[in-house]
Length: 215
Image (cartoon, rainbow, N blue to C red; front, side, top):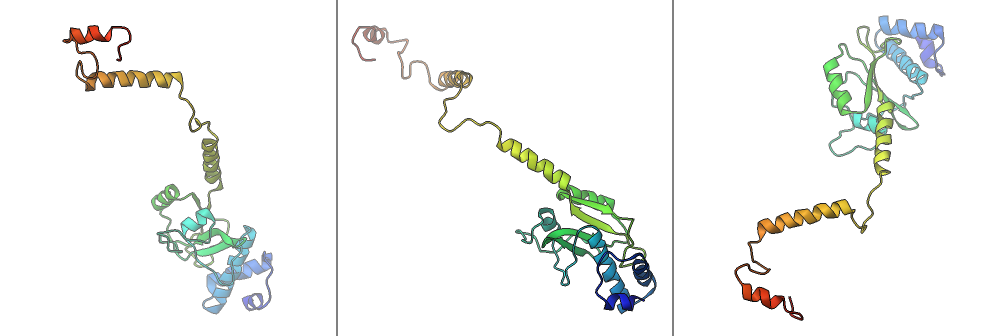
């Protein structure tokens, strides 16, 4: 029975007969036997997806999973605060790889909000039995590599866009617009005759027209 499966060193994936025994134990047994069977199924599910379930699991939040980072940022608690039911934390190469939750009911509206907030995929896996309860579902949360790659490509494209180097002379079109803007500003700001030849002073105007006179 499952006692034999738990006492020996199990190399995943489980054999067909071993998988059937573990699944039946989760469905019908209680206590220690059920816990051991659930652990075997959790290890087996991670192995099938390229993940590892550490002997001493360390929790991580959705932001860390999105970045595949072991470090938390300001405002993160290192544990999902979104109400995930009985989450299992998988790792790959020592970094967060997936969170598998076991909800009784899937809130699609809540998942849609989480999809908009994080670059993550939220999928219901119906091909594998939920090992923590008969009526539970298997909610698998993984980084959305497609959206992450698209955003990385867009960021690289923006960085490679041509930019005017510092100290370069603006184009003639820009200079023309700047001159026209300066003329409009000067006409609107300064009253007639200020800083120039006053129209009511013909003597000063005639004096400034003489050769050699400083303007």
